[in-house]
Image (cartoon, rainbow, N blue to C red; front, top):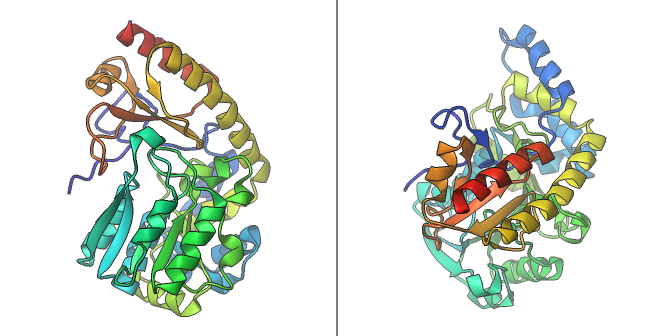
Length: 345
């Protein structure tokens, strides 16, 4: 399996990074200050199971503390879920976030794919319900999907949850990018945590607060027995003290998140229009990133111009020529369009 991700600024040095999808405002100053102050705690072990942070997340999300599990990024929550449930067979839309496949493969699960079609703009439709049959143990749905940015309708998400429940299938709903979606309350499954034990919702600090380097994510699940099993799969000190303190500071930054969402929505309109004017095939992404089709050598040429975009050719169901860019500040976005213009014209 080829582990290629966005944000590789260590290989592609001196590039403006459009390959990772974080809040366009960057990291809150309060989070940076919390990390600096955390230096005084380096000699001590971090709090086991992140108790204070779990309490703060529960208050932020409006759930009980027993329904929260923290991880070293959302990726660790994905892996601990797979280790706890040990699914034999799983269904994944294609393309979608690569870590689902990696985590499932690590427990020797057989993976089946539900191909998303370009002629439908890679939008998930109700035909996936026919694939949810006994014998499938797990379904991952990223909403909005990564890398396409397409939203799955809230009504369909509820149908998926109900169909999974009736057929003994566990649904992992990845809502990491919902913070940047207008009307996010119409898409989340959070209100169903108490009534469906086959549901886990994935969230992350990475995107909301631009904290990718900190590695902090969490899961929400009404099945407390499963939360205990997942916790047992993790090492005792899986979330560092700096990460826990950074998370506590970040959760207070509600206005920051709202400002970042508004900027992402506004700048996405600008970017899509400018990219279409250049002849690129731009899909109607609804997240804080844009999925598009262009020349097969665009990634290389962008790097030569000091811009790092996400080459999506390693996603299941995609080939060379498919790309994803983050929505950044207007100044950064203007620079990207200037580079695209120079390359394409």
